Image (cartoon, rainbow, N blue to C red):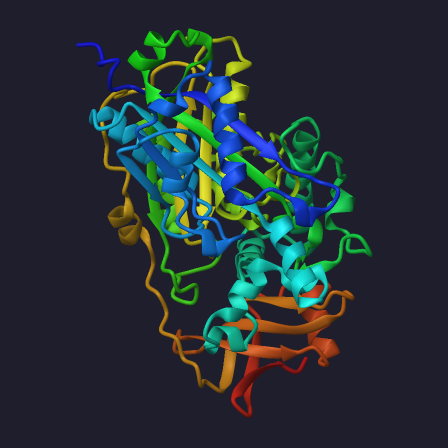
Amino acid sequence: MSADAERIAVIVGVGQVNDRPADPAQGMEPLDLMCAALEAADADAGGGWLTDVDSVAVVQQISFRHQNPLAEKVGAAIGATPRLAYESVGPNGDSPILLLNEAANRIARGEVTIAAVVGAEALRTASQRAAQAAKTSVADQNPLRNLAKSATPGYRQRYGLAAPVDVYPLYENAGRAAYGQTLAEGQRESGEIWSRFSEIAAQTPAAWIHVPKSVDEVVTPGADNRPIAFPYTKLMVANSSVNQGAGFLVTSLAEARRRGVPAARIIYVGRGAAAHESEDFLARDRYDQSASMTICLRRTLEWNGVSTEDLDRVELYSCFPCVPKMARRVIGWPVDRPATVFGGLTFGGGPIGNYMSHAVAEMVDSLRAGEGEGAGGKGLLFANGGFATHNHAIVLATAPLPNAGEPHDFDVQAEADAARGPVPPLDKSYVGQATVETYTVFYARDGKARAGVVVARTPAGNRTLARVPGTDVETIAWLTDGAAEPVGSVGEIVADGDDMVWRRASA
């Protein structure tokens, strides 16, 4: 029996908007960006869709938090009276793919006919306005960093682990050691991936930055590429200082046909898979891989009946290099093939939780630009959010995928939990000999090391943190110069007041 076209989920319209006024303080706010993105998606779908939207799903934004929730406001602004209007739980990077998967399931169950998914951030404008009000520099009004500062200080924050940019380097350094790479080799891989991202962004009108960067330009610290958190430079981290919005329209194949959408412009939504790690990044089993990422990616490919060789293009989430590095190893994606269709969060733009809506839009356009329906074009979208916490993947294609029109349970958490190794207990007061599990170094805006942190394992197998003072020039150099691999090295943790401090073992 052929699948019921009323239940097969397809994407018919995508829209993106960049807002770059001469005075950033005069920029559009998230609600306006969202509406503009959906209006563009409506035009892309042939027009006349928005007033009939019966589901509006919004990616939570942080630029103007006092305006949340925005879903009902978006519905009203586009002239719709949706039966369902809601926003994602948190501004997580996996949110657009989660909302897409939910929309496809609702269409498969006959609950909705036309679903709109949209998000936007106006961090460029929010930072400028906050700086003017507080009479400070724009750099002092980074919403992400300020949000981290507003959290109740605790054990992790005391050692400098507050924002995502502080935590993802733990995965980077652990991964490099596990892959058997030298520092130069690990940086080279990051530079190759990011350089290709910049080339894609340079050819993508909706991307934020259109300047290609070489491998050396990406990885070499300098005045315009200051070090942020070792081993990441400014060009290796998400660019959140943007005003961007993106959205898309999901409907049934039957509805798309009734409204006259050309077959070559219809993109089919496959099955997705989702799993997460502990919200506590110190309660992870390891930092060189993620069980939830691995299971999520493997099941997505399996459920859609595709192999890596079948994929024409991919979007591997790229807030920091460690994420696409881990993901490409799971699926076997070569380093010399672009891992993005949009340009990555550095060059495409890093609009917090909504980046993947831009990736969806670009994937749809990219697949459409192929040979048309039946050509077998397939693209994988992999999203990550939190502190390497949330993982969600899905496949889009130019032709129906296996089990099209059937709702499915995309939660593979139980399988991910079963695949995960034991989580070491946390010992906050340990002193004595310990082994480096991973580490990073934090830098001031002038490029000087502020401090470092070592995540260490005790002889009993427990996990603990130790600080490296910025004044300990010798240890900072040992952590960052690449002469030797710090991961796996043995040292000593000593008490310094309420803090624990790392001491290198004597040579």
